[in-house]
Image (cartoon, rainbow, N blue to C red; front, side, top):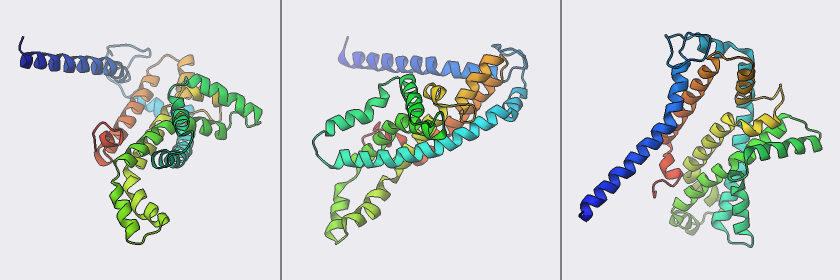
Length: 271
């Protein structure tokens, strides 16, 4: 077999494997979406007809409404705090050499390795020890920790892609370090920071495992409310809520990729 034919065959096999993996990951979501349109009182696939009544129930169900509002509150605070903390740590790690830098990078990445149920249980104990219970403060703190690595990654990659000559030019023209940071560095980092905030917001809004431990009835988020609903009912309402979440997060990612360039932010492209 010639090298050209071998390379072409390898390319075909690679993209075939990619297509199979994507199909394997996408088919469950398609099944959920199709089930949400079923007129039956029970979950069924394929659906025996077409109906939007489960979407009406999902949008009018009081627990889902309050849980979604709670989720927006938690997401807004958690994503913003993660952005502020993560941006500061990313700038520190990328721009300065100091003892313990490698250890700090490992600590910042550790939430990606530690199981979420461990994190949730730990914050549950922390809330009990601080007499905060399952309050918004504990829920937000848990979400900040879980989303922090994604913000650090996003801002860090943006810093690596930033041309240092622009900052040196501003400094040579007399700009103070504060002015260089506020007028040159931060504006150039805005796409990466916005992408990091968006990733943190999506992950916070859809986080379930840790939230199950740290939320109570008055602070439960939408994924927890969905879990509670599934324990009591078996109708396709939960499929309708899932379909809405899939649509919402997909739309956000498409918009972010269009205007922020997620391929560059996540270092899929070189620049």
